[in-house]
Image (tube, rainbow, N blue to C red):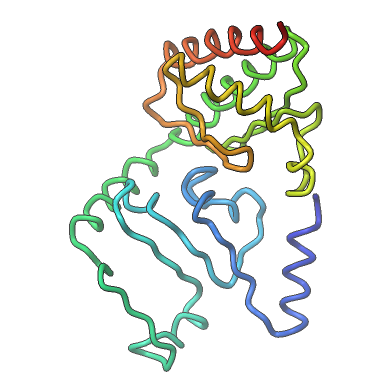
Length: 212
């Protein structure tokens, strides 16, 4: 909800705590600057997953110098990793960052994702299947419930059996959505108009079967 993250930030500042954003899912997927760019809230620390390495095994965390200077070797907080700085992962990461930093990359990705989500919603409505979905950038979620959820408790109330049936019907069509009701999915910049059309045609058949 509006104001939630601002409230968390205010509490952290009042209590002298760090505001940490887990951007493992949202980082470099919803925008070049991640969720913090979308929300306008700058955390004290951010954590990122393999997306920064183009899918290679790499992760990272970071923040302003005032926080990071406490980390070894400058500070007293120890951190190390066997695979830290793997040259292949770093090369893949730099190449990925160069690609997604190109003008219009995220606008195009967001437009493709929005078109896919709107198509899924329209197909479900056509067959009167309780369904909702939403997206930010290239990240999306779908739910077998009439209204999109606001929290985890809401998600738990959706029709999980309908979700399972839809998942397997789509899998039979050659489309692999995440197999969990609580898992987001991501679109790729390589997604073509034909891919979107193929997915929506399959979804129409899957929703029709659900309504039968």
